[in-house]
Length: 395
Image 1 (spheres, one colour):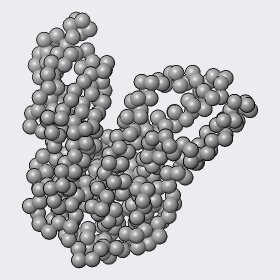
Image 2: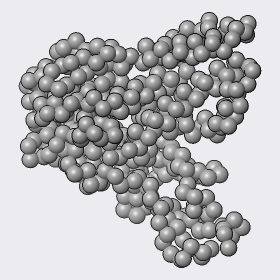
Image 3: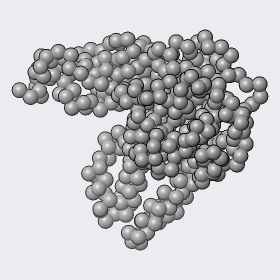
Image 4: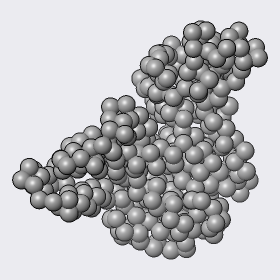
């Protein structure tokens, strides 16, 4: 990716604690830097371990040059929270002195950490900012352990959707321009959250720039968890470009069939000693991304030909656009258990649930004037069929 591109490629490393996620993220970053790319290795895991793996001190909230075109940073979400919150307090003070405004200035930023998802959203927002600065070609992200990572990655879409339904933008604008500083403060706070969540949602949905790389380990239990990760990623529309089997002694692992139904599987050779430092990480990366296997950015599909394909597609199966037409919405769900599938509709949104997770999908405009007639699986795609509602269909 050239410096003139709109932003860095982003690779998010996800995996169970202890699976080697941080080590493989660092190894990938080292390999990319050794290949001549400008790379940032960023940690969103609050149990930051980059310093241990790289065998170099890594700054908290400040990028540290590791060497050979590689920088690293441990995202300080509490520091970000304090910075953003203090800025809002300053805006409130400029707006005028009101006795009832003191309750906001008496709050400490640390008290806001109890609000679910606040720090997670700020961390993702920092990744968005760093990826858009133009200083790096690739941003490699060491995410928190699986459950926390999936919750974090689902937050942007969830937040923007629910805020707009509960407190639409036109009402926030009215509150921001009112004479009540409490309402103005709340509107400013919510707008910042929505803006950050929207930017993160756009980055995660950009299949040309962003992909997950799932780190797993040999064995059926690990394989089952990896399938749940792949299912959640497909359901939320996140692109997975590879599964990396860590400490793999053989290729015929229980995850091998994922080559054809979810994501290609790469193998990290079992190491005699724990890989720490540049040379050991480079050797590990060589086992994961052999020369014949391609590029550490897109190790299987360097051209990215499959990246841009959207996870949700709408086609007209029959008819000419009249009330007799049949429309199909296809959603790529390669490893979902069909027995867990749930569907529902709320106004212009379709609710799709599977494997304990749910996604709210805004229907295409043509489908909002239709009713659902049925759903089934066609290979790896969920197909939901719609027919026009004569009561609202244009005649």
